[in-house]
Image (cartoon, rainbow, N blue to C red; front, side, top):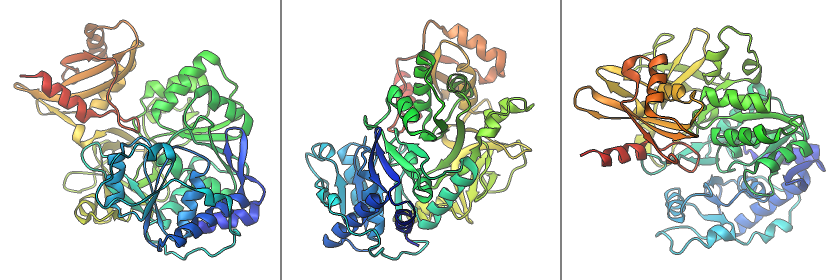
Length: 503
């Protein structure tokens, strides 16, 4: 099945309904969207791109991003969206790794390339062909359920990124999971895209095409809180996918400006840890408009869900524990917590989060050894440590590589971070382990303060809420934490900084 059939059908059924918005304007209706996608497919065929080949997109969010993406599918090729914040050398590395035939690139990004890697594909900046559409019923190249459709390159925080191969089967189940577990979508409902289309936000545009919704690119191209809430009021029934950093920025703005959120449907948060204190603060100022998902590029957006009705059930006796979790398994996957030996663990016992189902990637592009390490006996081993409670709610502790063992005791830095973030003068925190001659490892907390706070204040807080062995032995106050392009704290960098400070 070629996913482009969804767009072709949407053009037939929804025709003149808005499909792509740019700011408050309608950029393309569904017939125009499909027509631009067919023009892209015609261009690719003229350039000699064959079914199964890879085509990159290295662009800022823009209204023509989606017609290019769907046109790549229409031609039977696989799309490789690259994060627009990557360095050109990083982008070239990915394009060479996937053996891309060409890459659509806006003029701003093309200008950044001063040299190209050997074997890098041509960059295409002239997309004038989009204004000369074919008829939206023109031929779609047949593809199978298991052909590569989207190469989702990981963030590469611990080495070179790997391309998770997502198939039409994966993306269909992901989309149906959104519609069944996150929220339904009706024709005309809106998905705002302040976050990069190359990753989670881009994946979540699919259910809106399937259901005749409108995907809206902010005129700013990114996140401007005032613009975001204005677009919510204009388009109505508006949702967005947001990393925790975006949620915090929206909440900070809303706390000051008290916007009208009547047109807001759901902010779906995920992609990085959302601490309990942060989501409680956001909910207090934005209102009952949140749902959470947990997934990875290898199982796109689809491991667990914390639905809005659970978030709003504050009378439940275990509400705070549920809020601190990432929800329960989505219906298209099996979820299991497993030991290092791969054995299932009982409820309440921490272990590696493992998942299997039709939504799990086909493997890593041209990396059979990495694929074999990640998928064993049909189970995707996520590298995340978590525990399932008796009701099936999953609480994440940390990445397995971030586990700290001090005096024989396992310490999950996230647990300590959750406590430190309850202090009103703490903005952000990252906790890591460092070598300790007596205990093997001890904790160091890197803290971004809001105002006046001392190490003694934080130590008292930890001692009031945690076992003594879990408190940090050192607090380092910094202006900011190092993060990657997706807003995740780079604990590898913090560990390098810590190592440099020790003799």
